[in-house]
Length: 136
Image 1 (cartoon, rainbow, N blue to C red):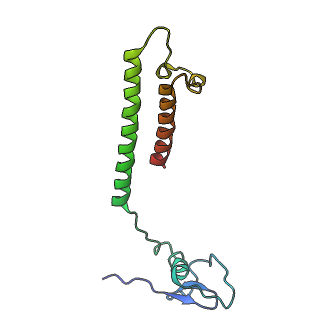
Image 2: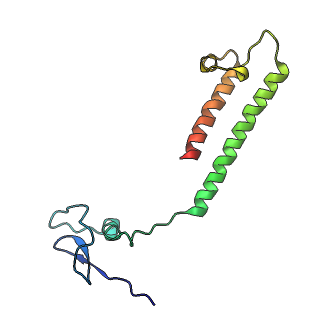
């Protein structure tokens, strides 16, 4: 059985000290007024920030994985919509029409020529936002 170091709250310096050495393990992060003693989350935050071994947090791996799967699904759906637009453009292409799916420079993308091009630009914006959310 391991013996864990014991820590105590020093009301005079408003910091936590290791009882075995009575040397402050960390300088207090916040200087409180003399009459103020933190309670609740503020007190607990002071305590766990006093020693890096006490700073243990839940990572929410399962929840994060579920959220990532939902974001992937949304991205895939938008990507399939964009691919469908590209396929429809390729099937309906006429020599005299130029579709945004064949754009090679960004200036062409900024000038929609039809409602389909507007829909494509809207999909680009939605994909950009979803991808940004997914990657952060």
